Image 1: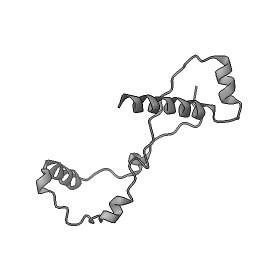
Image 2: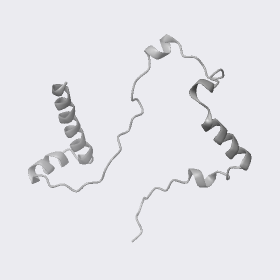
Image 3: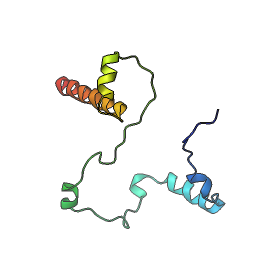
Length: 105
């Protein structure tokens, strides 16, 4: 049975294959040690820029599909506001996990 709305990663299939010269260049770059890398073309970041930096701004946790059993009244409570009950369940569980983590420290 064909799945609807499946996503396929086609990024690599759209690119032309690497030439032998490109493969050799990649191999030579992999062989460089950290001290040998020239960072001269990389922009330097000011203290002001770092002060505005936000850790994990684009972090998106990996989702796992799992079948669980929960009480019917809990499910009804999660579904009562409408669409998005799985997100609400995840938010409730994440909040509980973070509270527990705070108490461990």
